[in-house]
Structures are given as structure tokens and as C-alpha cells.
Image (cartoon, rainbow over all chains, first blue to last red; front, side, top):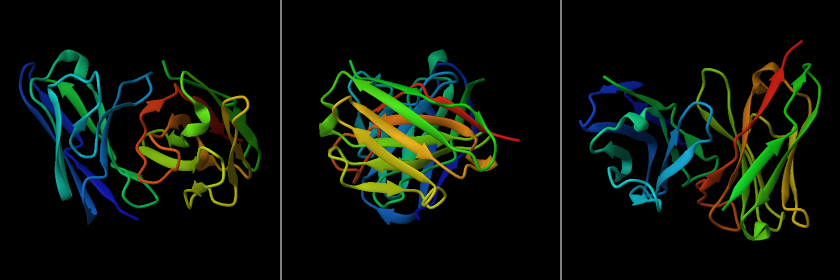
Length: 107
Length: 122
């Protein structure tokens, strides 16, 4: 099983500043990685798949990058509505596995 | 618009059974894999099970293998999760989600339902 490790556990960022979320895999793979945003009381929402492909309708301030074992989700200018828990997920090998999440909050 | 509506969550005693349902609309149901994912209190998301569009391929997490059964009825656009021998650590919100392809390989989750709460407690 591929273990996905996200860091930091909590990220406090001022409005308008950049937020950088990390996701590290225990085994290397190419680009079968997705990012989700989860707000309380709502279903998770797919933001990014294929490590870097943004879903239609997702604001351009969200971007994904990386391959191998190291992946990054960047929010270029944090907005109040971006407060949520963000999860990465690998879908290269079954069982698909999620990271434990990074909670993004406003400083 | 894709919509997924879960139901069937409840409070059940350890060792008991539940059947979750997820009614889908807004897409050609039989063309897509469907997946169950859960979120336990204080924990992260966990894949539970997945089924292909035709229902001929299924996957299970080791933690539920032999206890849970995923199935689907394409005539009524619904996917099910039959849960037996429930344990306290099965307590979670169970989400139904849709995959981007017919087979649950290389599968991310492009749409999610609101979830249904399962509590296993004596």
C-alpha cells in the first residue's frame, strides 16, 4: 500500500498570501494524484487530478504540481472561502490511499 | 447536474448489519464506476469499495473485505453497500462518489454525495 503523508497538518495563512501544501508518497509514481477540498457539512470537492489538471470551474488560484514522490497544491492568493481541509489521493495502485489532510485556516 | 444521494445510515450495535444506498442522477449511470469512501471521527478519508459500471469488477479495502459487499442496479441508477459484522471502528460518514471511467482503475472521484452517518455502538 502506498502511504501518503501530507504536511503541514495545519497551515495558517494571511488573506491574499500564498499557501503551499505538500503531499509525499512512500513509493514513486507518475501523475495519478488528485487533490480534494473538504469543508464542514459539505461533500469533498475534486480540485486537481493528474497531479496538475485543474477541474473545470475551480478558480485559477489553485494549482497542482509534482511527480514521483513529491506533490504540491498551491493556493496563490488565499481567500476566506478557501478555509477547509485538503486531501491528496493516489490512484496509481489499489488500494487508493489518501493523505491525512492539511487544514488551511486564515491567520 | 450530477447528483448523488446516500441513505441508510443509522445507529447499529456491534455485529449488526446495514445497507446503504446511493441514488444517482444527471449522468449515464451504467457508464461509470461508483465508489464508497468513509470519514471516521478524527481521521482522514478512507476508500471502502468500488464497482465497475457493469458491476462485473469490485474492489474492497482490506479492513472491510469479507464483511462488506458493493453492488449496483443500473435499472434504477443506484449503488449499494451491504455492511455485515459491523465493528465500532466502522463508525463514519459514508460517502458515495463517482469515478471518471467505467472501470475503477486509475480512479479519482469527480463527484461526491453529501454522505450518510453510520454509528456502531452498544
